[in-house]
Image (tube, rainbow, N blue to C red):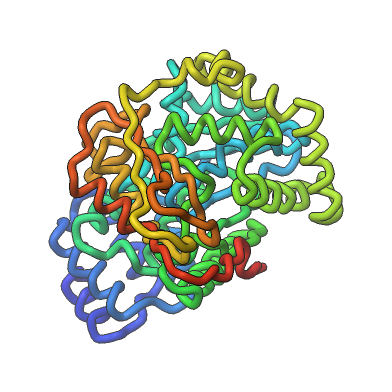
Amino acid sequence: MRMVDLIAKKRDGGKLSTPEIQFIITGYTDGSIPDYQMSALLMAIYLKGMADDEIATLAKTMLDSGEVLDLSMIDGIKVDKHSTGGVGDKISIPLAPLVAAAGAKNPMISGRGLGHTGGTLDKLEAIPNFNVDETVEQFIKQVQDHGTAIVSASTDVAPADRKIYALRDVTSTVESIPLIASSIMSKKLASGTNALVLDVKSGNGAFMKTEAQAKKLAETLVAIGKQNGVPCVAYLTDMNQPLGYTIGNALEIKESIDVLRGEGPEDVTELTLVLGAEMLVLAGISPDTAAAREILQARIADGSALEAFRQLIRDQGGDADIVDHPEKLPQALSTLDITAKSAGYVVGMQTNDLGIASMKIGGGRAKKTDLVDPAVGIVLHKKIGDQVVVGEALATLYLNAPAPQEVQDQVLNSIEIGADKPEIPALIHEIVK
């Protein structure tokens, strides 16, 4: 085979066969196919798409490009959760200890943030000394003994995806459903999970801006899982405003602790319970989501979920005192209120812009080599539907350096105020099984 012929085939709308996909992934992983040819193929896929069986083959071939973790020595059904990413999306942090406290085994391999989206690993590293780079042996023992671990993927897991993802980021091919789906599922299937709950975001703060795009991605992810013998359930959830009130790493850890105390924001608490209940069903712990939800609420009420978070932090070398003393988390040097210039109601938010504003003050990264300041970020005081008076604080910036005027303006302009109270967007749009 010649790579140039396969590029032309996809450019012209053709369907790649299993041997052709295997040739491409093997060649790109071992370096015999150069970046410029893979870039051309990625753009052809972005423009022409792929059939469902092509996507499944691509995911499976990327999975097979490296190590597949064997978690069979961990008792029970191993169930994981993945989010397609958003602003203020801290759900994994309270979710992992909560489902562990309910008896589920949750081996969670997570990622870092880029651009307007936050990463679970960056947030956890706001906890002093928290280690996300465990060995496979440490990872397995921790999940077996205490129910959960949240770690970064080893370089041996789906190395083809690692190379392709870096190329997609610089070739404007990130927002491709075949490429997103194969990337997510190759990593998740390689992590050894037996079942998977997916949180697929849609809205102005998500990669999938429309509900139709999000549903197509959800259906594709679920289909790949089924074809590989891994039951999947996907929830389409709203990202037209940030989740919770905090954007930024230490700030989101504090809000996650509030959730486990039963004192968290309504939307973060609700989504944690909804996804957690589905995980308990897939793990065989509960017959239905209603009963599972009651189990999770009881684990919050009796304090065992909070204790599971302390245990998770201790297991991974972090300072578990932050659970009771969140002031030990990194603290910003100063704050700056962004105040309302007009009265009315919050009718909408430019969620993507709020994420970018947090990134610009150091809370995220524009490129993978950027350092993240764990102390900085944004705390919102208003969400969609809330009433506003002139001069009232809409948001507070947490800063370790002066905020440029453009960032202040960006935050102000991201919160849209109108005369009439709007309909509050539903948190859960649809379930795909």
